[in-house]
Image: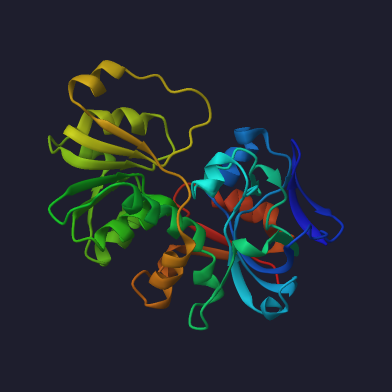
Length: 318
């Protein structure tokens, strides 16, 4: 099978079809999405080597539960042991022995076939197109914000970063009734959020304002975003960190203490509610798709995905 592989070098390789382990399904990939995390892996994040890709939709080719065969599915990317303290506490995403699809210890979905534990699979509703289903993983990550912190309609919230994740987080937060402002560098991306009734600000406008926020989501992917969040958060406010920076970030911790700022790390989230939002039409990710490429053109697709101003690039596989 063809696969997009990173082993110190990004390349397309022919690889054997993966063999499912115990209680795993073999999945034929239909479509996969390129993510900023993929770009960070190529820069050294997680020291990963293997097939990239963790946002996907596919069809089950083989599974211990025959009722799943032929079903169109998406898959939770964290594969847990089921036995450690975290797993027993219901925190399987934080399993100490987990593998993570296309990120840590497990080949990913930029390939014709992929394997995942059956318990990780969710059937995609018929009215959710492949191009939307591929957004379930980042949409679930956005929902994790409202699962971790209490958001009130009276809140003033800033989302730093107008990339794919920042836009999706802003869309989700807008459903709470809060006053959400998306901050970024690209007018066309900010305009996407404004067209659905959100509020936007360029980075220059935001820096030139004195407005403070009860909650700030840092999703810029740039270490400078942390400093900006600390500068603009209101006393006793909450900063939610979505960015995974490559390398260390220095900060003055006394500021957090004196102003009694809470900091929440936020990673993966719940897939089932994300599917419901798509099924019910409450979130429409289609404006975020910049281009769809074939797997054979995935090297070019990868380069397009990291081009400034480009949103989501999808890879059509099956």
